[in-house]
Image 1 (cartoon, rainbow, N blue to C red):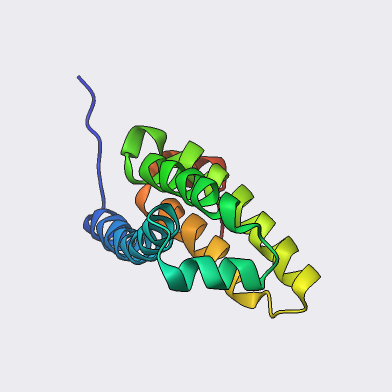
Image 2 (image 1 turned 135 degrees about the vertical axis):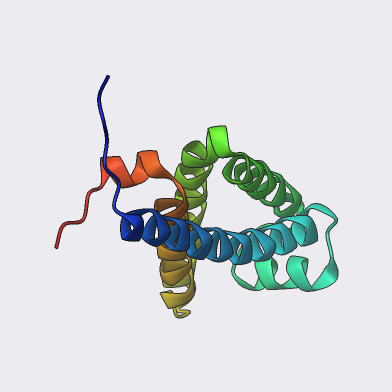
Length: 134
């Protein structure tokens, strides 16, 4: 029989980090769902905004479906890493379009960091893959 000692501070620190990660992820998810659903249902503001950036109007719904699937995968804990990878690809495309259109690209960049920060803080496996040390 082995005894394992756990310091009380380590567990609460992990719990707080997971809570912050869930909050960051929830905010990202809400925005992504809003954007995806607006494109899927062809809401006029979403279509006009996409057309202003050079997207063909008939492709806006397809883009929304791709984002919706990626976001759903990000929501599900077992597929959240795949979802984050797909969202990163989507945001990479958004950055490319912004550069081409001469628009500021910081929003998509920061948003990509937030998607991964939320996942990092709430997912032990991601923290094990990317260990930040003091």
